[in-house]
Image (cartoon, rainbow, N blue to C red; front, side, top):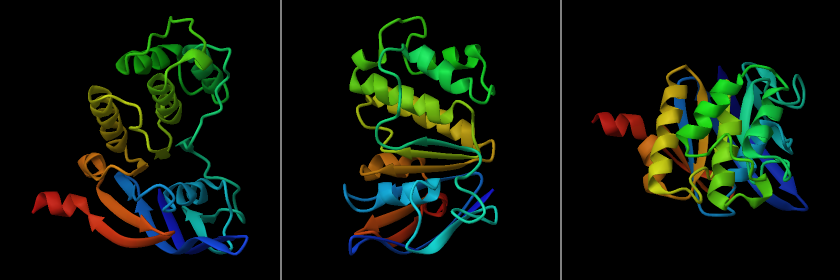
Length: 219
């Protein structure tokens, strides 16, 4: 699997939100997007997900151009902003409903992932009554449970305690080992550098710096 972002630019109402973005992402790696709020991290994730289309340039997934050959990457799990869970359903019921769309994940796997992140699959509490941390955990599980070829997580560590962050990292390392592309946006440099192989520093909608974290760790 390969994602190519080429000369990508996005302009809305004369505001240049993304400018001259070039990157090549390949399977078996975790890529970090580092930057302050409003830097363009989320917009770039939307671009790669096919949720927005470029003013110029393009995104290709395995040679297929988004907006021309495909509308969205075919095998992708995404956590961007607020997931569309049903407020009156329990956490397990929400995940089971999502899983039923493709029938790739069994109830046992959903239960296992929930327990790993200290969520009780038998808890009948409605999603709308979940704490921020519980909602974040459920969103992460929804994005990763089918182990798609591409996983995109926007600020996944928000509202999580230190132990939960470590568990999420372990989950992502295991998924990466199965030759997936994982993209994480995070404003916390320390947290991002723990997990990422390559970090793109984004400011004002542009990639200002590319850091090969894996190479630095090996030196």
